Length: 335
Image 1 (cartoon, rainbow, N blue to C red):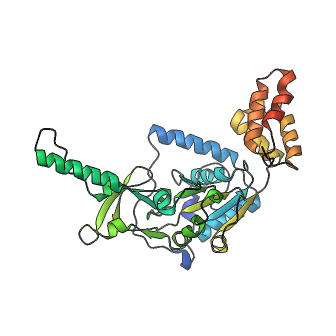
Image 2: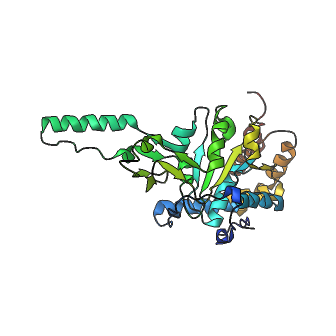
């Protein structure tokens, strides 16, 4: 097991063997995720540690997660809201020391290029060019300097950053893919299969400017050569879905599928302890039992249980049951 689900960091990623020949990528080595040193990184590590404590996978789940790591295939995680689909990505990143999770939240307007791979701000570049030209024309004081190269106006998105040729895989969370436009899953196919993409704006300048520095989703600068980005270590990609739509068969066959069922009493108690502490976990045990009973016939989310335990702990006894029923409402009932 490379990922063990213990919630404790370890260097297991170094034991990951070479990929299958058909998933071996040859992008020129770039960098590994940098050390977590600043205050923001420290807070982020604390949040990841917290999420890792929440995620305690079963034996079968561990095998599926490790299969995705070994095969360099995306992991499609499905299940009801609140079952820990997004938490999984953060738990793997923390335990294996793979740096910040690159999160790509999906909505109906999300597109592959502008939101996932990279964004080129042509309007800002044109405005800066016009301002610089005007300043040179007047020659007055306070003239604006000539704008930087084209790389100043290109920023890689979460998917584009994940495909940079790092020596360790990055973790990419494509959150709620089922909310996307109908074309996005198909648009992802080639990128996930080939592990590379091109930036036409840079390719047009490749002969004159073969190396261009661009910003990443992390805010760092990296050098893109000949307008092409190709991964070296294929990222650990987690695609989450609440089951609101079906995906095309070509995408499904490129993914390892993990279905997360409703959590049992032990897992719910672990989640409550991690979020609210030992005391509230004890006093909320009755609510956990009620939640489990209702979840057999109703669609409920773990967030509702946490809200109910926290609020009812601070409420007067006569109102506790009423508040709990108000907060734990079935999600599949028309409003």
